[in-house]
Image (cartoon, rainbow, N blue to C red; front, side, top):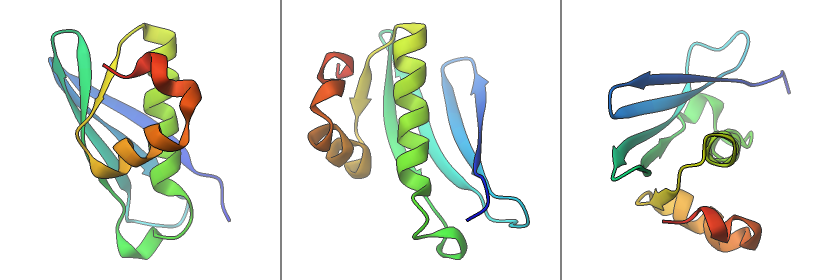
Length: 96
């Protein structure tokens, strides 16, 4: 598989992570909004054209990496993000 690039898009109190695959027009997204200093992970969306490549997991990992680096907590409103928190006990300290 081609390398996936994750980009961050932030405006005021909300943002998205985008997953880009060279040669593909479809992009994966993880959307969030801010609430009391935490980021609510709202939706993880991966179009069928790029599904099955671990894109959703990479988007969540980018969110987690930013939470560690920037010092915010995550509220996993998205069912996929919530499931990933259950799989990764090492993320417990980042859950709001």
